[in-house]
Length: 280
Image (cartoon, rainbow, N blue to C red; front, side):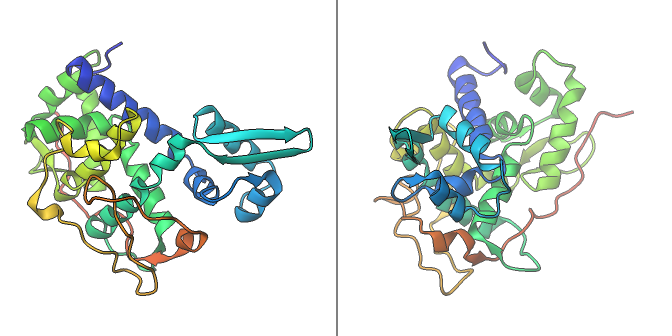
């Protein structure tokens, strides 16, 4: 059933990406996936790799990731059970360095260096704001839209003023810009820079090769300012061999346990102008 007033293909695309982000964004999920990026592990071995999780926290997380089709539970014997990536989870990993690259370019510098995994978690949180994916899709395709028109597209069955809380949040997050009350909305440089990430997520959700992101009808439009750049926040961290087929050719970088906590300079999104709203 359609949730926006966009064409069915676009509506389904947004719904898939929104659902995928909801699967991987919850706290610790990406860390668990990265911990499983090597050989399959027994529960105790995995628990040792994510030792910051308290007793009882890992099992429900693993169950949810198995239900989402990202982790595979293999019962060799009654006393020998292992957990490992599914092919779907393996295909997801090359998108993670792309998120770090976006964060380094578009998020404000932190008072303290942040690990790459923290950059990923912070960025995913921004993308899972309520109605965020649909709003970003519309602004990318239409460039500049009033709040009322945006509401008719994104939430056609709701009162149009309900668009303003999520819009204000995206402005505060630095992904959307506006000149002020009653003025139209448009993507900020940071929001526009999400193109490779969202396009690749769309391809992954649809079960397509990640290179298909370059042909996405909305996010496949390449921007001159989006040229590939190396990770420069930590001299000791090796540069990835490839960010993703959406930006470069070749396979994505391999993730190792040391990459989980390697530091990178970034924090919260850049400040933006206050969001517009209905005139009172």
